[in-house]
Length: 210
Image (tube, rainbow, N blue to C red; front, side, top):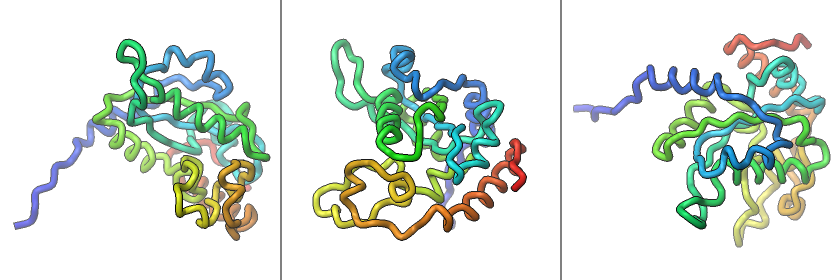
């Protein structure tokens, strides 16, 4: 007899998408200004790109009027170190600050070109919520251009090749110590364009005509 599998009700996924769609977006440059509002929360966050880096022109075009096509989806699932009266460091604010610092270090991205939204969730739902949103939006930095969310490699792994993200966006200090990745922007451009075109058509978003 085949094993019975518990399935998450489809209505729950629909409710998550509706909930995510009505969350406000904020400039990544303003994370310090609004950190008190986000402090203490866990959940999923979405980063949106609206700059002029040519590889992401389709993403910028889709986001020209509103933030609707994330370039990255991540999660803040663990609370980090507890301090004071049961509050904790890390969470959504901590992860967003990590990403802000990564973007600041590289030579061809500007944090002024990024916005973010957050979906605050109960800790038991965070991993599920991230998976649902990644499957729905298929962000470029979660698929084709991987490596944005990684941390410095541990002991014994320093000889691994740079991630695709770190090869395309040079500057993170730990990545500069790693062997180069042979990938190039020109080799990625057709794949990124096709991917974004397919997602924009699927989600009925503004489509850049090349």
